[in-house]
Image 1 (cartoon, one colour):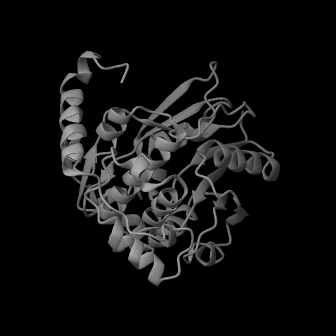
Image 2 (image 1 turned 135 degrees about the horizontal axis):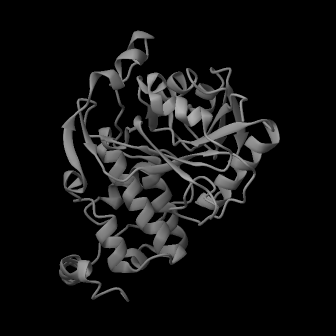
Length: 331
């Protein structure tokens, strides 16, 4: 196919004002269309989107965390609005294309890929600041040269793009997608607590699996290689006046208030065994009430008894030691 494909970025958003301006400023440099599905944001996310002409803003009115629903919404909207030959790039707002990407051989190879091709990219985690990153050997399936294939989804940890059995996989090794999540570590840990609670209610994983995966004490560096971030990941965007280094931190994040809503709905003691109690939920609840945040518990939140925390902590340690041998695969 000789036709140059349109590049359509599809992005779910909920209270992403901390990074959204940076994301849209960069993405507007390479995308033909940016479809943003906003899910009831209460910050400036919607107003920021309106500043960028390439953004097509749609509403995800669901009150539930459901990756399947939002992915189908975004993909279907892209297909409805842009019927011509296109590449879908499914990026979160904290995932930003490196500045040298469009000058690589991989980028040109991507533009020539046949419909039905899955596009995989390296996604380094920028670590604490943009000066360092954690690199990984396994690329992420983030793009799809669209051919209308069905998107098979899960409610959580769902692959973002279609991956039909017949699809060839193209690893684009010289194009990097920079993940900013770990530059705002307190926000990332807040997100882990939120995922823990969501998976508890969805029953999509076991207790010890959740505690192993979502521990706030995670040593991120052990998962990859800590390296200095190359300047050419940022320089081209900075020349355009885009601030590539500043990130904003908060005392409390929307994830924390969502967890409080789960406490209110299910009772906080349902989550006593989860690894979320190094955080002061009672102070967060008091803050939420003083700021008139709705659907949070009216009564004091008490952490689990220390003996209970110690027991489940020890079980988690044993699980982590032996899970490599699959001994506890049934837990």
